[in-house]
Every structure is written in C-alpha cells, then in structure tokens.
Length: 463
Image (cartoon, rainbow, N blue to C red):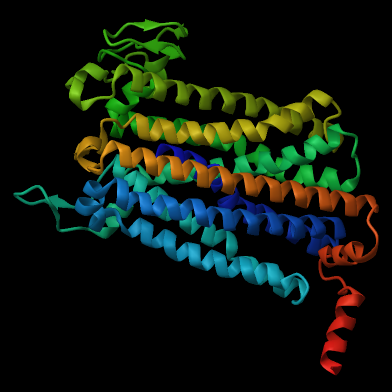
C-alpha cells in the first residue's frame, strides 16, 4: 500500500491542478488573442489526458487494495466513511467526460464555447480531492457514529463523518499544495529550456504563468501548513508529539530541526532551538505540549516511526521556506523591472523546485499516516486489526506484480511525455516536412484542418 500510494500520489498534483493551470492559459489566449498561449494550452491538455489515463491504472490498483489489504477496516467502517470514495468515483467519471469534450473541442467548437464547456473541469478535480481527503481526515479524527455493545458503528451521521475536525485544514492544505506543485513542475520544464538558451516567447510564457501561480500560493501554503500543524496539536496531541519528537509532557519545549528519537526518550543530532516548540504550538513558551509518554507504548508511534514522521515534517518545512525565498526573488524582480530574473541560478532553482515539491507531497502523506501509528482509525482501530490475514508469501507475490506493473506504467508515461516534447520541439524549430509536418498542423488550436485529411475524406465519400 505504501508503494502504490507513494507512486500514485506523484500523479495527483497534475490530475487536480493541471486542468486549472491549462484553463488559465487558455483564457489568456482567448482574452488577448494570443496564439502562443493557446498553443501552450492545447499541448498541456494533451499531457493532462495522458496523465489521466495513467492515473486510471494506478488509482484502480489502489481501489482494489483497500478491499484486499484492509478487509478489517472496510468491513467495519466502510458504511461510515465510504461516502468519500463514492464522491471521488463520481468526480472521476465526470472528469473523464469533460477531458474528452475538451480534447475534442479544440478543432470542432467555437473558441469561447469550448472554453466555457471546459470550465467545470477543475471543479470535478477538486471534487475528487474532496472525497479522498474527507476519507483520510475521518481516519485521523473519526466522527459521525456511535458504537453498540459489540463495538460496531451505528447511528451514522453522514454530514459529521464527512466534515470532521481535520477535514478543513487537510483539504485546503492539500489543494493549495498540489496546485503550487503542478505550477512549479510545469514551470520547471520551461526553466530548463530557458537555461538551454531558448528565450523565445513560447518558453517565457510557458514559464511565467504557472510559476506566477505557484509563487503566489507559496506563502499561502506556508500559513496553511502552520494552521494544520496547530490543528494536529489540538486534535491529535500524540501525533503532534511524534512529528516534533516530544517525549515528556512539559512547557518551554524546544524545537528540534531533524534529529533522531531513541527508545529511551533521548534525542541525538539535529538543531535544538530552546522553547520554540511551545511558542509555535500556543504562541507562548508556557504552552504545555503533550509528550509521547502521555499514553502507553502500545498506543503511540515507536521511536523509529516518530523519527520518520519528524523528518518528513521537517523536510516539508525546509523546502517550503526555500520556496518562499524563491517566490520573493521572482516577485522582487517582477515588481522592479516587469521581467523575469536574469540570473541563471534563479532558473536552476526553478528547475528543481518542481521535484522538491513532489518530495514535499510524499512527505506530507508520510507525516499523516506514520504519525497516526499504531492506529488506522485514530483511537478506534489499530493497523494490526485492519490488515488482511493473507500469508506473507502471497503478499510478496502481489507486491512484486504491482511493482512490475507500476514500473512499466510510469515508464511508459515518461516515454510518452518525452516523445511528445521532442515532437513539439521539432515542430517549433521547423525541421519537419512532408506528411508529419502536415499532421502537426492539427496542433494549432482552432486552426484549419490539414488539406490532406480533408481530401482523403472527400475521396472516401466519392467512392
């Protein structure tokens, strides 16, 4: 499950955010009559479709794994939190239909009609995120049910089960995070082109729009991250203790940047900042922070699990801080000269920002899931009670098959993207001729169809 989720989540930022970024570029192209912007939107929509197709495969594997690997959880709690998965399924089907209409409409619909028909596409992507985050937030702060004498959930309140205390902080932190991640990744592709000397308007515009979106959202995400950490402090104090490696409940608790927690409660390595953890949690050094020893050892993460969650959290904070500096650099240059920064170091940093954001997305889910251990449903069901009873040998066989499938699928995805990129670059450089060049004319949004295609159709009709 860890492998498949870690692989699938790399596609999530593009599935959720790329439609919005594409439509933003599309709107710019229509509003300003900008053919370059329309061409970028057209090409990004093709990438969006390929990503969606790959996401179908990885997402389907995940859906099967819920039933195969977690029968205890799904059998007992499915009626309570399963609505989130139902919402995600409806969003998936709607998104598939809208993507098909969007791709179909580039050469067959009027420009503004095409745009308005595609406008619900980002909303369906957000609805899919709504369903998945609602289910995960429920696992962190389960609500909306009572337990009967045998411990089974009854009297399910769907509204309370969906809108749990952690839903709002998790949802907005996730949505803003994936949008800025997609922005930095897309901009990073064009940053590489700019570093290679391709200073044409196509690359500058392809960099500027997504990077501007990401730069604006970066400080917003930093504040949302602080808010969700404070929500964890109040709603899941033991999980907060794990992410901050706090052993004993106390005030004036120091903050450790990185460092390793040992089973006896000692901490080695890292940077110790006196009293900062209490200040960050409650805006005062007198704030009492709950420690891991406040609950029995069987009800809290192990020292190793706490260290993993702590490192994942600190990596997120470190990368987020560096991205704020990058966004400020960009904003300063834009406000002063109304142009992109001239330093090659800026574009080098922008080129790696997308990969860094993907790492933070992984770290976010590690913090969420590992910090909750040993609970799969916080304080209601342990992981050991939820997993399948399948023999270890069968699980290793299943894992091997999944790894092979994912390597092939993700490898195919990268190969397709590289082929599309090379094809577009050659078309832009004007080095293709003949039938292939005619075929590339179909890449022009709202442009005329290639003459050869029309002629072939007419001949077929005459025959």
